Length: 389
Image (tube, rainbow, N blue to C red):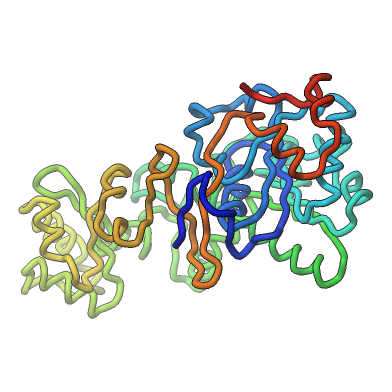
């Protein structure tokens, strides 16, 4: 993988030459734009002057803003809307993460954009989707995965649902489906000349992610009772166990040969069989007591290089330094920040990291000029566009 700084070589990647306009939202929309930029797309980030209302930290440290320049445009001014439509005219993809109907009211809806560029792929990122009883209702990841059935399935028996950060909804069910959708639609547009709208709803994506669980449930292999199933801590051999130093090990040997390796590593010669359900309480006790007898580091040495499917549960800071992650360059030091490297990896078109995270409007003049917008200086002078200091 090639990782280059903002002053390094020109951006490359499998999406080199694809042009994307991003109307900035929060969370899953910026992550999708970041991913497209990581893979080589030429993304221009259209911020509102002054930045986003929900800013989780300094803009210069917001990794979701990497890989593309930020321009600040006043979309309440007709000339600001006209400027974005000028950008759309030469774009392949537009992505937006506003509530249904907002871009239409601004004059930047699908019909407005397709009138300027019929081949445009118009990607829409929302929680509930463009229609349905909840479409106009506020919500966040935790709400979307609740309605999709995912949150209710996560947690221990007898306990409350456990919130899986905002990974399952915002980023897995949202961003990744938006990226998949716009790239699929781009393939269609390039072969037919026909653009279209991609309605990426987090509820839809999360439900789709649940396909294997849905299949298991309908086949009788998954119960709606949380914490009683194969992959939700219902089995003693797919769980986490505390070590003597108060740390944790993750254990997941689903296949018999891997379970055998676990027993060997623990030295449990008289343990119950893996699927002797009547003795699972006994097995859980044995696993709990065994892992509590040594430190996490000691167990790490025992199971390192084995097929027991055992791994230490690391903090994020520890993950940065784990030998496997270091060897692969999973995290990189770039622009003064530790960042996840672009993923996945490509043999012929390696990804690059270019533009660092920046303030809203930090590249307004440079980026608008590069995209062929005329009279940028006048737009700045009239307050239609803003160049951040």
